[in-house]
Length: 117
Image 1 (tube, rainbow, N blue to C red):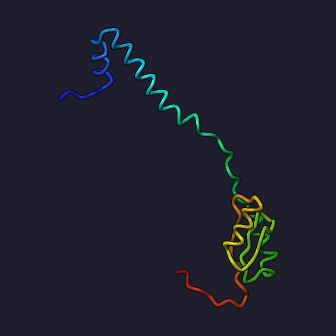
Image 2: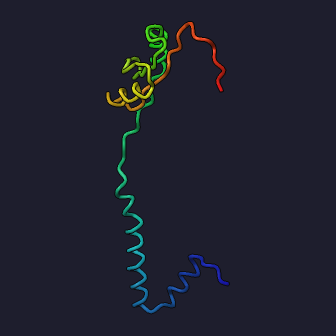
């Protein structure tokens, strides 16, 4: 069985009559335009900037005791939302337009240590 390579296909194309070569050219152009069509629909989006973890760490150092036992959402060094349920805190941050909020639970100082299973 003959292997299909570009060279063997080109040899076969050379043997075609000109009318068939024209049909082949039109068919290939149609296939190429079908392949390119989805690419035209792709739009460039600006990348989401990474959170500034240094300012997050500074905020946590300065304010975490005020929110002990709560979930918080930060946008850099700005508190966006806080409360007892992570889902509500995250939703409030997204509602504020924060694309990548830093959401975490602030353990109370008197919390018992946990095993991270």
